[in-house]
Length: 311
Image (tube, rainbow, N blue to C red):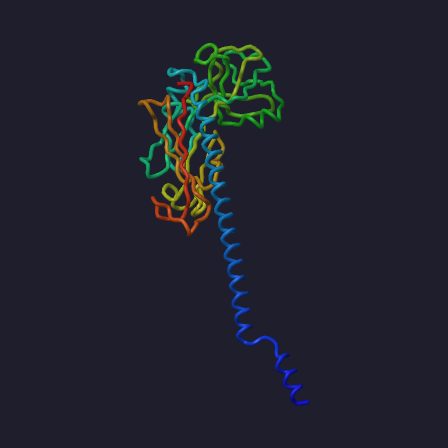
C-alpha cells in the first residue's frame, strides 16, 4: 500500500517551479512583444495622421492665398485713380495694426520682416459677386438703391467698407468709388471723398439703373507665432496660426500650425510674387529631430509663384 501511494504522489505533483517560471517568462515576453508592436503601430499611425493634417493645412492655405492674390488690383481704377493715390485715406480702419502697422500706399503692400519673422501681405481687389443699382443714381446723390433684398444687402455690406460704381476698369465717368457711411434696407448711404470727413460728398457722375456696383475687399494674410506675438494675444502657445483679415472684420484663422509666411517679389516688381509657407505638425515626435531647428516637429515648406494679372 505504501508503494502505491508513493507512486501516486510522484506522478500527481503537477508542474515544477522551474516550469512555472519559464511559462511566466515566455508569457511576459509575448505580452511585451504584443505591447511594443501595438505601441509602435499606434505611434506610427498617430505620426502619419499629424503629417497628413500638416500637408492638408499647408495645401489649403497656399491655395487660398494664391486664389485671392491673383485678383489683387482688380477694378482699382488704374495708377492715377483716387483709391490708389490716396490708398491710406480710403483704407483707414480697414487694414490691421497687428502684428505690424500697414501703410497702404498702393493696391498691394508687402510687409517684409527679413526672413526671421513672418511677412505680411495686404492687397485690394473688387469682390467677384457684384450687384447692380435698382434705380438711377444722379450726380451729387449720397445714397444708392441696390437690386438685392434688404437682408442680402445688410449681409454683404456694412459701414466703413469701400464700394465701386460703374462698368469701367479705369476711374472716370464710368467708374468711381465711395465709402459706405450706413446701410438701411436696400439703400447704401455713401461718401465719395473720405479726405473730407466733416462733410458727406455725393456722386461725381450719374448712373443708370442696372449699373454694376460691388464691394472692394482689403485683405491681409499673416502668420502669428512666438516671434511677432510673444504675448500670445493672437495665437495659442506652441500653435502658430495663419490668419486673414478682410475689410471691417477682425482676423480669422485660416489654418493652425502654419509657422511662417515669406513673400518675395521677382523681377524687381510686384507682377510676379513668390509665396512660401512653412507648416509643422501639431505635436512633437520625440523619435524625430529636425535637422535645421533641432526640435521634434516635422515640417513642410510649400512655395508657389503667383502672376498678378491686374498689374
